[in-house]
Amino acid sequence: MGKYATVTLWLTLVLAVNGPALSQPANANGSNAGNIPVELVRYEKEFSTARLEPARMSRYSGVAVIFKGTDDLHYYAKPETAPAAGFELKVEAKSDDFEFGQAIFPKWHIFTDGLSNKIEVYSGQFTVFVPIETVTTPAKTTAGNVEVKISGIACTSMVCLSPFEKTLRANIDISQSASWKQVILDSTTEPATMVKVVRGPEHSIWFALPLALLAGVILNIMPCVLPVIPLKVLSIFEQAKESKARCIALGLSFCLGILLFFAGIAVLNIILRLGYGSAFQWGDHLRRPVVVIAMSILMVVLSLFLFGVVTFIVPPSIAGKAKPRKGYAGSISMGLLAAILSTPCSFAILTAAFAWAQTQRLALSTIAILLIGIGMAAPYALLTSIPSLLKHLPRAGRWTELFKQTMGFVLLAVAVWLVTVLPVERQTAVMYFLVILSFSIWMWGGWVDLTTPQPRRQIIRTIAVIAAVSAGMWLLPGPTPSQIDWLDYNRPLVDNALREGRPALIEFMADWCMTCKAVEKTVYSRRDIARLIKRKGVITVKADTTLSDSPATIDLQQIYKEPGVPVSILFIPGTDTPQRLHGLWIGGKLKELLESLPDVKTDERKGFKIGENQG
Image (cartoon, rainbow, N blue to C red; front, side, top):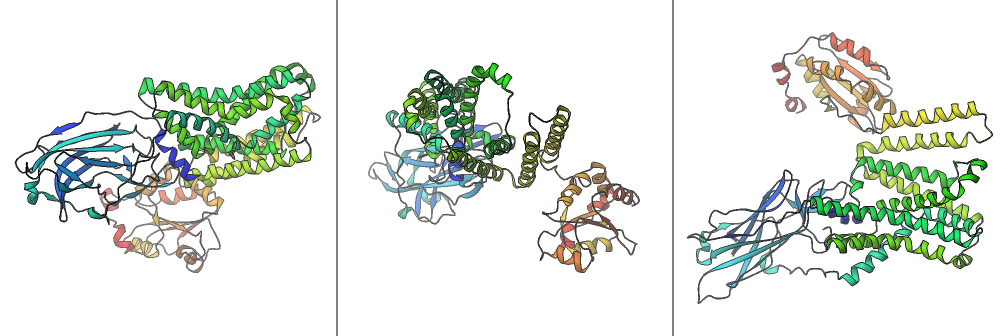
């Protein structure tokens, strides 16, 4: 799944940049006049340029393509991890006077994208060398024109730019090669052993459009969408008992909901391309923690419905009056929900179709996007337009309930996967919130029913809402950036601080300790505490006791004789006994102790050398 998510990375919002190629004349020694760089791509403050320079690599003469740009903007090094076939960085040289070999690239480095996938990339400043294999017109001249074509796609950690192709031109004199700059690349490939890279085939319209249609059909068996299907199929079972016309109308309403979602994407893509020169990226929303958290919450809530933990029962009097309207609106919303749920479980074939669409004319791109929606809706349209097909489906019974509950576990698995997409520091908090939310929903629908007295029902549901909202406010905002410069635990560090007359504060904590996390939020995230620590020149040490064999855990038991965490120990110079603060409510006492310490001048704070003390 991570690989497919990586493949979708290049389709995000872009600003298309296409600059003119630059022709560079040669000077006396065969180098480019001025070595003027050509801008390849640019996005806000991120940019990358390239220039040509005659050069030598070992015993080979050739052309060096020198890239220079910001570190966050990167090119793809391997076709396997590039956004689509043929979009890895390529450098190709040609000339009427020389025959060039395959380009030699430097060693790539690893880039971690928003979904924690490891990708091989080039970025910043690097050099690509293209060797000259033979001089095709030696009797004529030793000088000649060179064209170097650079193509690929560039991305930053937030967006990917449009695919580009730029041509750089220069004139070189191979008779001057002895004076050319030597290029040293961290590459294990020699020019004579380079293997020619074959470009992937281009998709034709007659291949890509059916691919888009097939991609939509396949969406129905994605783990995120599949659990919704039994809900709709069971609805079709029920509607088929009433009338064929109503069955067809509700089925088509469900299809309309799916088409509305993809039509919305098509409209957004039109606006972006015409108004901003950008393209809509499939899956870009999954790079935003807020969206990922919302999707995981939706998965958990749907799983609770499939488990039967909670149901919303509409009184018969209301249901009887609003049934037709509710039925059509419900079918449209269910189709819209199914399409939305398809986004985190995108299949490779869907990505390929969508990627192809973004490289075509706007009209053809719009048709391809709509075809994905039509493909997803087609099975339902067929099933409901020909009600006789329902006779071939298994009869509803206990298997349908078991199937629904099985799909509930599938949704829970998808929710867990979505949580793992989040930054590591937020995953635990979100998991705890999902548990509390599940309990609150169970209270809302499972503790009361229509026979429950009104006052009692309101009290229980109010408590459920308060529990869910409070947990969300506490756990979902994410960790507050620490205002305290914590050092890793090192006992000599504390001893050296005391010898230099510095107070030292050790916070003993553990990842599995919920009270420790509460202390972090209620005490060490306070600005007044952080200001006091800085003003008093206190050395702050975080002692992680998560593992039983860590130095902090051993010292906590053997040196400090403490039975558990959380505990904070403040060492004050000139006193024999340190101050020990246990439990959660230590903020007031810690502030009082810090205020009693003398202030330290700014230059004295800077005089404490952490590296020396740790050594």
